[in-house]
Image (tube, rainbow, N blue to C red; front, side, top):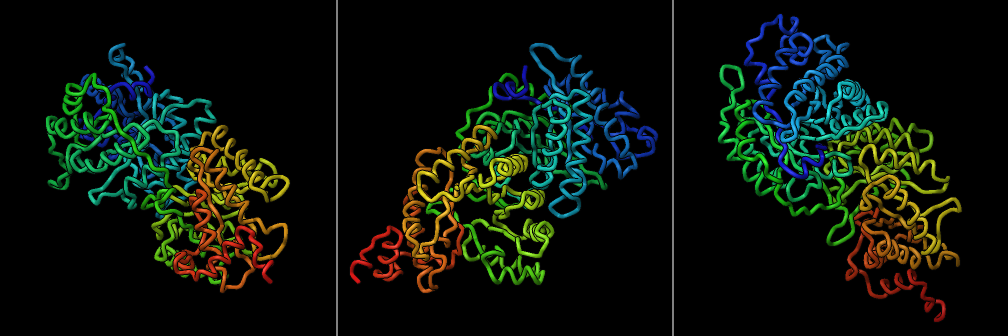
Length: 602
């Protein structure tokens, strides 16, 4: 039976702890070829031991056995000077598991082999290792697993969202080169603090991984099932994926320098029962401290059950390393802070030229305090290396800022460099059809690879669209490519209908406000799920500072009425309508709607 179909129809049982089982074998240093602690080496030195472990869990009734490859990347194996065996260990580990699984497979109990992919020992968000190097490690590991004929991959015990992206990137590179694709599960580890090791809460995990093609999202390790309860509830309510729960046999207790786990098989069943019967968990198993007895108890109590129905309330969002922010707020708009943009902020530009990175981070934090929900970041400045500057800045922002990041650049290599350093779900600003579709496809490819949202400008090969209808037609073309061709969520594309300034007095642009607002309305009415965004201050560009805040504020209000979701703006400069003097407010409305009464009364 197809494993994805199996997850939908009935509870799937994973095995228990590989490490705990190995420790019980009373192995000697010679069994590890003198590399005690390198459990993965046993697939070569003592394959019979690993086979016995797999058999013990299959006899207990599990459907899925995990390979002895948790630390089998070049990076981790290199700590034992065994890095050259990386491919061999992963391929052999799958082959051992596959042979045993097939011998226990029948029509009533299908058996599968999951390639176990651990977090490694270096965290990219802490700059221990680059995204690309980590991705390469996972690519090599997955190549071995695919050649060994694994049925599924489980990226587990994840501690850093950027590490998950690197693992997914490595796996998909292997899929592409091997022309073979298998399902991928992701399982994160939540500490007793209530977050991942890097500080990510469960909602940020859901948001960050929501665009990716994975078959389940769940929890394993660190704690017992009791401590996972709130996280499972969050997944049950908000995650679009099937849920896995593979806990330890309780919280570890240090006795004599060793971790001991005291949760019995009966206790495990008791705590997992509401997860399965009420919260819709569809994959269960055991992590550290669990034994075949734990798995047998789960199988005995939950075998044949269908996953409980879940009422999922998935909220389209973007995220930082730490938290998630919905992209449709009540009240609107989503505020994108504009002051970390070298093209629009003199202060930021001066800090950039001085390479005052800490000052630039502090300016970002100021925008958070001022009420920004997302941070627009542009470091493009003539004479400077934009890639280098973006890398320097993003590496700091990734862990220093609690709100999501919008990457603002026209250069594909700059966007890619930034995405390799952002743990959460970013927004890329921007794409358009000015130079045809080639660059648009390059940016869409990156958004798909890294799970990013995108800002799409209403520009085509003929230039910036001026009428509402033309803006809408370009948006429709971009939407079709994003949703139908790239299979990306419609709620992850933001259309910027690009208003022109009303300050020029040019006859051609006097209806710019009207056309922009109408384009927003058309997009919201005819492109399901799509979001709209506006670089707000463009409407007042060139006007005196005494009127700009008022015009921006009034125009924002009018566009929100038409369905505007987000605005790039300085939140501290927006004024409530009732605080704007009535005559000035009417003047702004007359400008926006091209009411020429002011000319007629002169």
